Image (tube, rainbow, N blue to C red; front, side, top):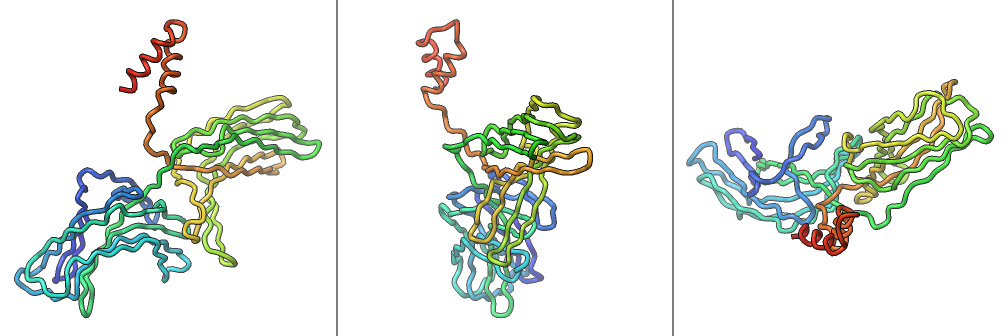
Length: 332
């Protein structure tokens, strides 16, 4: 429920029909704090009621119409006067007239397109909100209610591993490999570092996850780099032929899906940054972009996949027919 007082005239209250059952999630506000908001997905209907309560019963409230809007907009902090709306829907709730008693108005925005994820960054904010307005001659009465939108993805069809080399001629040759290039937000980055040639004294090695927010276009492009995580791989000198495993759990970090060229206004990209530091405090870098995505509902496994799992479960002690029967039982 969203509530606000407008002096002694009226109170506007926006209530979603499924407020009691709809999930709420934490979302960072512009001041860095976190609040909980109702969570929506692309294509979901947004429906509810607008309650307008007169502060003084019996006193007339003249108006030029009552409406509710569903808005998706991008605000660039260096250009605060301009709000770039990519979704703008309006429902008229009442024609011009007067109110002599409190009233409730139903609204419904059916299967609303919500193409982008809600985002609050260093230089940009993407938000969705409902705004109820009582139009008046002198001063409008209005109330906004923010919601949060998450964009869901399915498993990428192509998800190749990453293999790269770091080298300084006749001094250092390192190969590193990550198991894939696209990770969901609760995933685990698994990899391995191989030392093929080590003739400089390395004392420290780490992998950083870097978020790069890019806003603006042309000459007015701003880049903000934020180190989300630091993962120490090694403390001490490696030797030739040594390999070091990597397991980096993403669930503990606050990240969004990769966002590329959102409404031609901003992008959010993520990079794995391999950092080596030698005993003379010289730093060596190698950076690789990764794609992050938000995992949707798990699609029920196919019968053939279930059969394969079942046959593994019964390996050595059951026939293929028994395994298939078990798979069918699992699917029911």
